[in-house]
Length: 385
Image 1 (cartoon, helix red, strand yellow):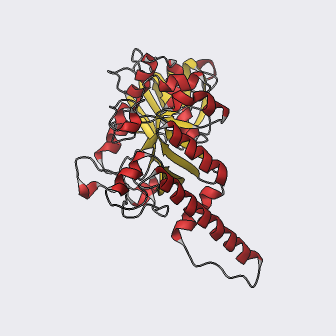
Image 2 (cartoon, rainbow, N blue to C red; image 1 turned 30 degrees about the vertical axis):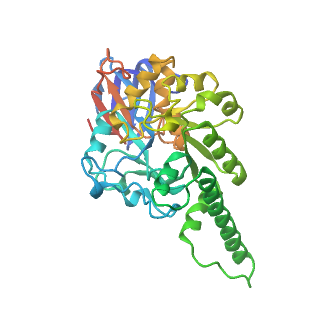
Image 3 (cartoon, helix red, strand yellow; image 1 turned 60 degrees about the horizontal axis):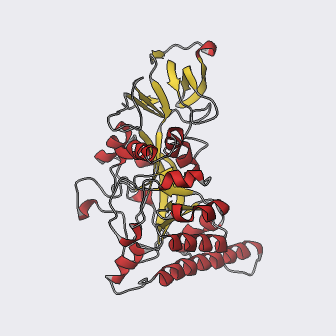
């Protein structure tokens, strides 16, 4: 398939005001100016429409809390145990929930989704596309990273149970304890492989799940709003040499110079919400712009269902109104989000070899505007809108 005469915004070094994009077997085969257009059997004339990479929401709970249901559709927090790294998002996701359709109709073609922040360690997150009927066919990575949580959420949940963790100290301690157990478990496994007389340790699902995190094959996503919690996340990540990302980063703008020096990766948001708990008291729509000025290219997220996922581009627009450059706002929901997730080799920008995930707007539409709706959406080269 060949799309021609599009205003193609690649989110990379080069844009094409009057360009083409060729799709073959679900990936982008070629892209460039109309002067270099190749031959193709199927041609679609976009007539000046704007073409962007499919939007990427770097932090959601899509499919974990089903729309319109109570307990029956609540699969986001296993709050019976504060340490549950063995849990996997893909075992809870329901892709037939209507919010997947709302996501792709809003131009969101890829999400990171998984369990919530009730537990200090809550489980394995997945990177998935938003089109399909079986989650196994939609995954980019079924275990892209591990979710950790600091601050008020674990404190609140377990205070109500009169159980640990009831303090920030206990939250950090539980995370350290389980990571240290996983380190020892990994060491025992390696010794058993190398030494004939050394027995394998008894199987431990929690430790097994944390091995890829310790080996930096999976990211450590730290839920942290307050500045002190952000610094605790950095402290733990350094101690165990984790490849970490700060999720929410609500007070990040207050410590942006320090975070820049630490080369922190951040996912900001949600910003289209109220200050519903004390650790959100410094929530500011200007935060992403201030982070950008400090050299931190933060992704944006909806934290769906906190903010309905189809409003991700609107969140980018609010940041533009608060001082973030428009191109940077679009990057925050495309390439920066993909980079934070570690899936930028597949999605987040338009380039040969990447998945053909596209969101297309009418020529005069502002993708970040409140009235804008995509006119076409492609996922893996298939038109889904």
